[in-house]
Amino acid sequence: MSNAKFTVKKFVVGPIDVNCYILKDKESAEAIIIDPGDEGEMILDFIQKSDMKVKYIVNTHGHFDHIGADDVLRDALGAEVVIHEADAGMLTDAMGNLSAAFTGGTGFTLKPADKKLKDGDVITFGDCSLEVISTPGHTVGGICLYDGDSMLFSGDTLFQSSVGRTDLPGGNNREILKSVRERLSKISDNAEVYPGHGPSTAMDYERKTNPYLRKRSF
Image 1 (spheres, rainbow, N blue to C red):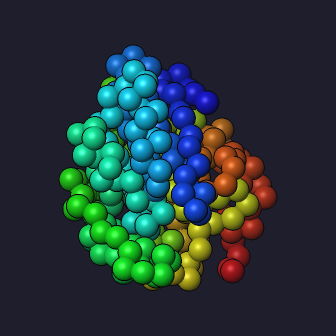
Image 2: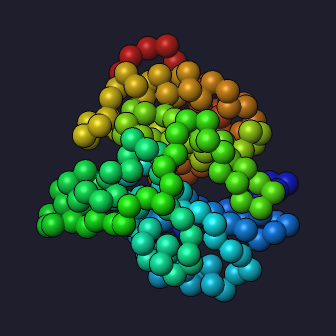
């Protein structure tokens, strides 16, 4: 998968099948990793065998299944971990990131974020850039990443024919509806959508068929 500026490599990782994406600028080979939730050694092996320099590790939100391999990759690659400021505390809190609850044990904590994101920030790598769009609802600090044209990385905000669950701590039905209907209104109909779980989709398809994008409640 690719567009004119960067290539996209997807790995499905961990017990909850999280989509981890590696984006590489074609000209400079500078790269970012989105949501390395697990299997850090496998991701690292791929990167080390490829011609790329990872600049950022981007978490679309702070749940354990999207952050689990942050430190393995940060320590090995010298990359910076970035996450929305509202979810940053989840990295260092096993209860907050849900790892304690979902693993049936003490869970895990990570080092603090190197940088905290907010709505409208721009993440650059090589000649490429992604706009940070704040999309609360699944978590308070959930984000999507948009290249301004043909690609949206939607985390656990928007899925094929669905949206992220809102029954976990920090989730909010009203907020996720506002996020997908209003905050993502700027996304081109032609954009491909790469979610945090499940298959990719297209924005025009979701606007036509996804019941959560229509003006109705859950």
